[in-house]
Image 1 (tube, rainbow, N blue to C red):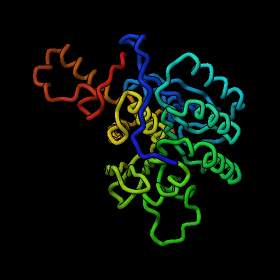
Image 2: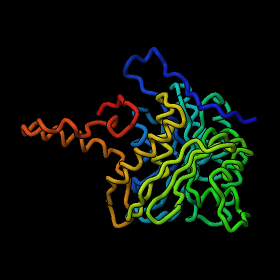
Image 3: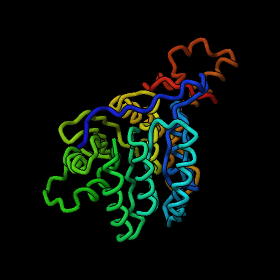
Image 4: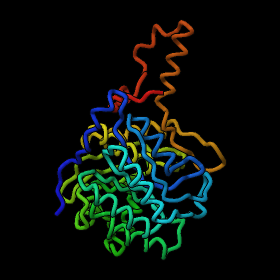
Length: 318
């Protein structure tokens, strides 16, 4: 039976000294464009003071505009990667991104079940690039194998609606709590629904349980079309939980971190815009330049660290 307490990560090993970071073990695919996947996980987790343990489940064939296909790593290879590092490193949180197919999901479920005291943050990306039968098989396996162990499920409103409530017939779309109720019946205590569009100017993100709404955050919509936002958000939430934030605080701070990433978004190719996960370093560099040029006397009110963005104090060294 599901419990509705905040997830509690393992304490980092004390014998590692001050240099030890909490660790997030991530199952995800490689994205050669650098937009999402493992790249997003590493940059995002490291930005808020956690160390990423990346378990590669496959590789997208894609550019910055679209996903063309995916090449999966065999399930044995996925399992061996994870178990090798788990025997060596003290992990605080699991994050499950895109895993390639039911076979990989099966071995991932076996791994996370062996470490049942660790929170599992599960992100369901849009799979619209895939064939319908592959999508259904993946959704079914994720529902059966991963959701019963999931602490927090994260997904875009349209993706979660199509997956969890495919037969919804009411003219009014499902609410975030409607989605959380279905997820709760499958064993998930918390659901974060993103990308809800109450109007053309803003979008909402809602964290809820099957019983109540815990947090609602609104942001202004931007003209650009982004890629890699879901992996970024889910990785930062995982990392903030690993460093000791409770779920509501981690979610709120991660959403504001993502907003900063989008405001600083950049376009490395001819496709979509990528979040700048290191946006906060630009203000630090700017202050250094002012101080070096002797113009830093009036800069006391400017943002100089992630704490000024409302984010958890970090200890990442660059």
